[in-house]
Length: 200
Image 1 (spheres, rainbow, N blue to C red):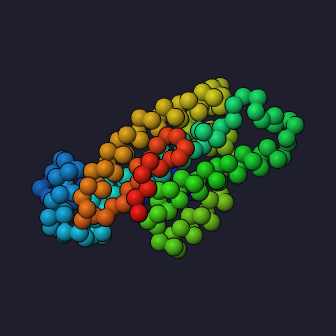
Image 2 (tube, rainbow, N blue to C red):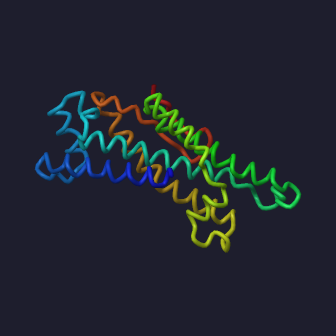
Image 3 (cartoon, rainbow, N blue to C red):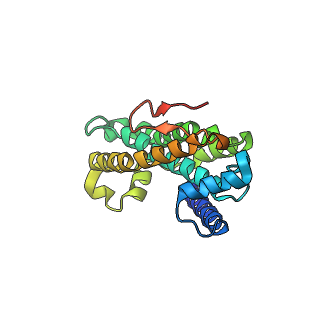
């Protein structure tokens, strides 16, 4: 459910970026696109329905959510030997499912949830009940999860997040520097606390 929704959002926001670039004579720079739309629309540039700037802001927000979700799930993977599935039985499975739900909610509240309307927040948070177990989530991310195991998966997830987070923070810094946009994007980290600077 969320994977499909995230993909649709990404495609929609990339399309907004493309249309915005076309309207500004096929500009190839995000900075030129944003500054050009600010010049045209003023402080409404980021709110202008369908603008490239709006697409850029929401693309960054969505990617921040996804990066933070991967970090939080990765940090929640127990070390080998910490969880004895045979002893804990169904309680272990319940905790496994709850961990992805809680990770999803935490990542959502720190990123997208800060800007979603009340109705959208409620819809998203209710949809989280459909979250897969941690094992199913990791099997989706890693075709060979059964062979590599949880610790290798955790290391790979954190490495990937550590590569994308600086790019997302640079985009957030750029958008936040344009005061007219009121983009209010957080700066995320791969460690707890996950927000370096909470912008109100």
